[in-house]
Every structure is written in structure tokens, then in C-alpha cells.
Image (cartoon, rainbow, N blue to C red; front, top):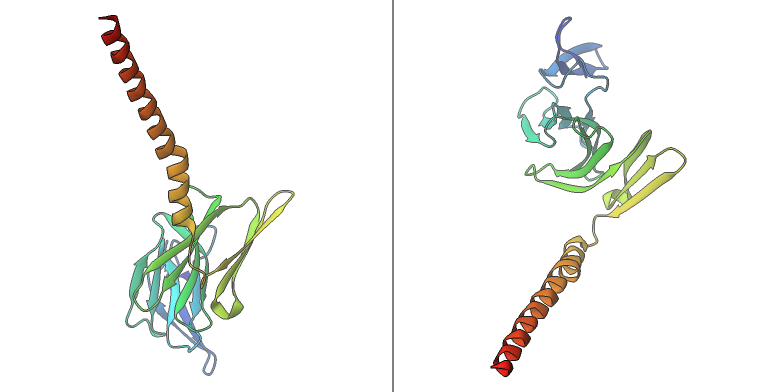
Length: 200
């Protein structure tokens, strides 16, 4: 990834042929060349597709730039990690939004249909490491903060329990108290009506 012209504000994806030392540009207008961090790119394991980031999107294309497929990942964001899975089916990505420069959004892009699954978002202060683990069945994430480090391992084959736990928390902390308050209020009104009738 490099500027696609001497005075160009945008990057391009260049392919270097190691056999004849030629360099050709495969994708133009791929990212902002004025940003501090370069855009990312990665070959798939079979070597017939390339993933590169551009203005918060991920572009999949052939080595010559053909058959481009652009997927919107993070609006006003920049990609800090892009890595194909060992089986070549998924892409591990990490986007940092300009609105939240200390919050990294980690997700999986399915190369076959462009579907996105955000795994989690985590804050960091200094740096981080992100990679596939367990032959592509897990994602390992290490965050370096001031004075302490945080590590995550996400098992992609284990069903997510986040939604049931969110629903249980919602019921315990919102629905149940609201029901108790409504029941107490109705009972108080009934007691007042009973007291009025007894007075009459």
C-alpha cells in the first residue's frame, strides 16, 4: 500500500513480481495517504484473492485488481489489522473509528458473501496484538494498557450466550421491578377504594 501518485492524497494497492522485478498497481483510490497509519492488505492462503482496506471498507479482489468486491465495515474508520483465516474462508479485521480512537472493533468478514460478524469492541491505551488461533477456530486478542494488560480468547465454535444473558439481565433489572411497582400501585389503589367504601 502506497500513494497512487506523487501528489496523490489516496493510496493504491501495488503488486511486486519477484521473478521479473516489475511493480503494477492493482487497486487505486484505496485509503487516505495522509493518515498516520497505512491501510492494510493480505493474501488469502491459496494466493488467488487479496483483501485490502480502504476508507473504512474492505475490498476483495484478484491479484490484478479484477473482480473487486467492496464491503463497508466501519464508517469514518481505519483498519489496523487484516488477516485471512487458515482455511481462506474468513477475514479477521480490526477497525478503529475516528469518533472513538481508543476503541477497537474486532470482527469476522465472511469472504463468500461479505457478511460481517463483530466479535467485540475493546479499549486500549498503548498497543494490541490480534491473531487467529486454534487452526482458525479461535481469535486471540492482547491489549496493552498503562500498568496492566488484558487478554481475550474468543471461541468461534461455541454458541454465543450474550443474547440470553442480556435478556435475563433485562428481565431481572427492568421488567421484574416494573411489574412489582405496578402491582404495588394497583394494590394501593384497591386498598384506598376499599377504605372509602368502608367509611361510606
